[in-house]
Amino acid sequence: MGAPPSRFLLLMGICGGLLVALPTAYYLLLKRVAGQQAEVVSVSWNPSHTCSVTTYFPSLGERTPSSRFFHFFSSPAFFRVHDARGVLLRSSEWHLFQNEADDEVPKWVGDGQVVYPITKGYEGWTLPECAGR
Figure 1 (cartoon, helix red, strand yellow):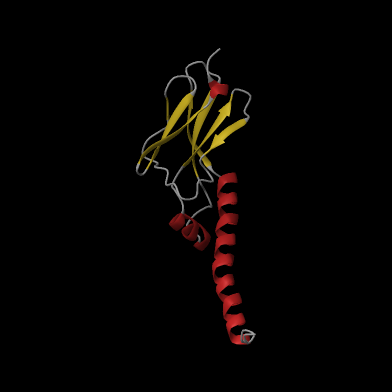
Figure 2: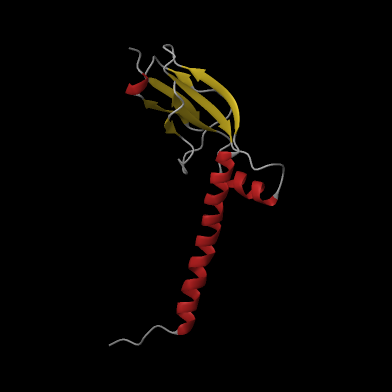
């Protein structure tokens, strides 16, 4: 049988885990708050007016250390699609490894498809619930 790990190695493993887990948890908390306080930039309806896509800028207030930390790791914008009753259908808010661009508004491609800008081109959704009747 092998010797049990030393207390030093165990302590280093715990400290290393905390060095990763605490900033990640803090970032996710800031992401949630920034989404709740997000500023509406634009709203665009599909041709049949069954759904809208909204552009948001995440907001944590003016130049605080928390807002600087958050914006260092986040996209400058995110997008949400709602139906005519206001029910959320899709959101790019929690696509953590996708950088949405803020220099262009999303576009409807017919009634049931919307595309939005990302730093490497475009991304989008097909939404059968938005297709005109």
